[in-house]
Image (cartoon, rainbow, N blue to C red; front, side, top):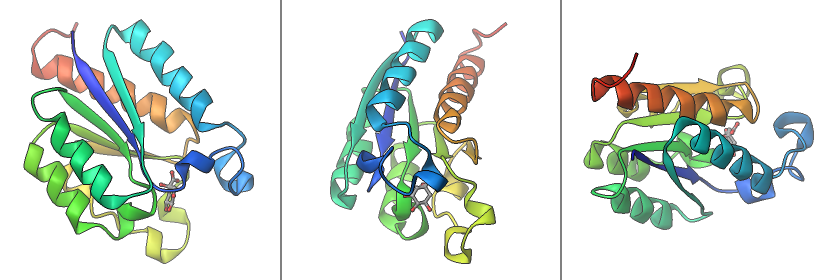
Length: 151
Ligand code: DQA
């Protein structure tokens, strides 16, 4: 069975409370439950982790090697600052989908650049919590296509 790691970066533990006009009212627990339901439906295994610490996220990405076939990541603000996370994703060479609740390209200019974007399969942003579900779906389709098992 395919196994996917979902990583939530800094401040996403505050989802539902944090700037709800931008990020909505859904909590991280709700998102994770929705992801688990979707994973059951898609027939994949999920591990989900949130951390506010850059090094912990780097460690988690490294740990995906040999344990997971794909990665969905919302790196939060580290998206725009972290060469270390970018290098970790490039280093493990596991297909990765970058997701954001908000459309980072129509917000402040410091959010327009993503260090991840050049090393991921694709980016999904602007659909609120649906960005996660669309991201997981896109990743699983990509992995199945790679394995030649789709359609
Ligand atoms: C975010 C967008 C980032 O710019 C921001 O720092 C976040 C959340 C999003 O999901 O829209 O923490 O990644």
